[in-house]
Amino acid sequence: MALNYYKNELKENAQLLASKGKGILAVDESTKTVGKRLAGIGVENTEENRKAYRGMLFTTEGLGKYISGAILFEETLYQNHQDGESMVKKLNDLGIIPGIKVDKGLNPLPGGGDVETFCSGLDGLVERAAKYYEQGARFAKWRAVLQITNDGCPSKLSIQENAWGLARYARSVQESGLVPIIEPEILMDGDHTIEKTAEVQEEVIKQVYIACQANGVFLEGTLLKPSMTVNGADCPTKGDPMKVAEMTIRTKERCVPASVPGIVFLSGGLSEEAASVYLNNMNTNTLYRKALWNVSFSYGRALQHSCLKAWKGSDVEGGQKALIAIAQANSEASKGAYVAGSQPSSDEQLFVAGYTY
Ligand code: 13P
Image (cartoon, rainbow, N blue to C red; front, side):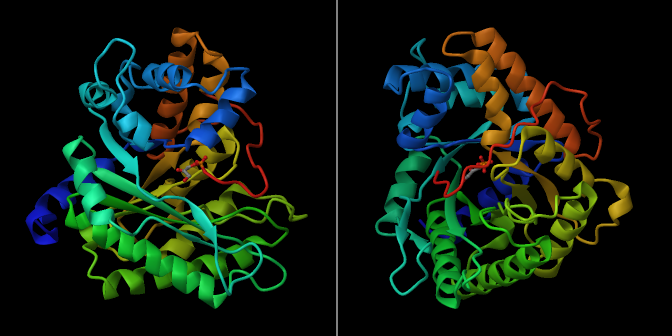
């Protein structure tokens, strides 16, 4: 089977994932990364605890009203809830589409700058994606990471390699029926201005779509997951929420094709509240957006931070209450209807330098 066979389904699923008022829950942290989150609340990183945590998320009543899809790590896609039912069934019961992280992580890029990486996992990807489809996944994610430095990163080589990798991945998983989420993240590390981020991001995203065209990626069956256009975490100028929204939308309008149904932002270390406010501003009428793609969220940290703290290893009800509140806040933000402070959400900066997922 191949891309042509899946075209209608890919388009339908991409549209469902990009439904108005819904976003994506990114819970695809690798075993190592989720360990750091669990350590933050004093919980040991065992398979049982990971299962308990994610099982709590996936049985939150009403979550499907705000969340269209959940990105899983491979372990979770094949895992059962403590009650014996599969996690996939739990998500399907909520009306949430299961997705899967298919990249195999970042490696140093030979010939690139010190901080530069390429993303691995292309070998055997068509076959691997077919197995994930069989297991119930309907979309995939691949995260390429670029960093802005004062000595010229991202280099041309890194932009080219990461754009090409994203496009090869996208085409490969489409061959097996999975909607690719194309994620070219620009890290917040550094002291650069928002204007610099915009300039780099424009170039990166343009190259991503040039590579997609070369690989015959079916854009109607994809989603873009970029970072917002913000200044570096160490930039002396503090971010102005309306400017972030304007610059983010301007950047995307300059380079994201109209055939892409949705843009779902990552939170990248923004606080929960900032991630909601910036998204809300992007969806307010005063921005006069020219493009029709749905503008929503695919947050990891900015959806889970308060929830993890409330759960603390055993408080299922508390964790679910925090999750549904933050999901509702971001659903409202995706419609330009979020009132800052209307939901319990945290202002704590979630940025960590040199972050890996
Ligand atoms: P954050 O929202 O925490 O940046 O994570 C989203 C994600 O999926 C990173 O790949």
